[in-house]
Image 1: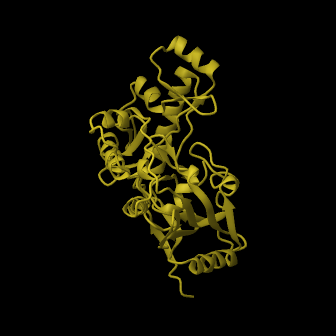
Image 2: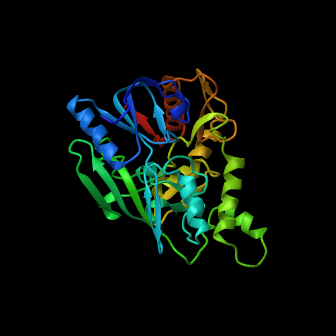
Image 3: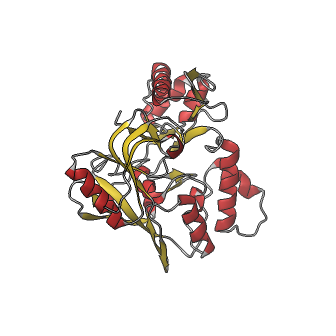
Length: 338
């Protein structure tokens, strides 16, 4: 066998929360053929399989049994406005590469950590843009059979921070490639207040996609704690979405509660505002804390465990429910399933 299967691997440096979980077995794969070989090896031993990319959007709540597959495949192919990317590529590198060749669409998603293969799972989004609107196809490999799967955009069932890969295909398939359809004609998306404020400071000439990307990067650096400095996965909870009737009831009691209307007629609330309004910035459970910098971010202040992070998350959820009767949903993927 060509694969190097490691035993009892500490995953602290393989997840951005820096949680000290262990993988019972772990293998790094550099090609689709190695993915197939790893899946066959696990299937023969009846090991469960967990796929771990950059570890930037997961909570390792406990040790992981079976085989952890770390996807390290590489390759970016650009033809016209179509981009095909291997799952193991850096997301931010992809953004920079597409901007370099004059393609726009991904600029608002600048500086999101992690690998390309994880991006469709979460349907990553930022500053008014969601990746799902630009995905043409997602290629995957079925864990049980090794069968190649090709899912169209509609088959991916993209929703707000959601997709089929977080639902019925969770731990059923390994994403191998992502195909995007971008544009040579730049149309800026500057709907968010921070970007509108930035635009007002620019000259009257049109802005470029690269300039928007640079602005987004600057905003993110100021707004969010750097995972290279303090362990975190960025936004920990989804923003709740409510009907207009529910919003009116809430704002009748809490007049300053912010909300943004969505295309489907619902209204998106700010999870950060809900948490901050309860005075929870800095609130700790063990070595896990709500960030002083941004209320939507939970951080590892030193030696937090997965149990600390999940206990803190439950406390935040409980307090928001108790005050506002709103359920906060955890955004990152929790391993093992919570």
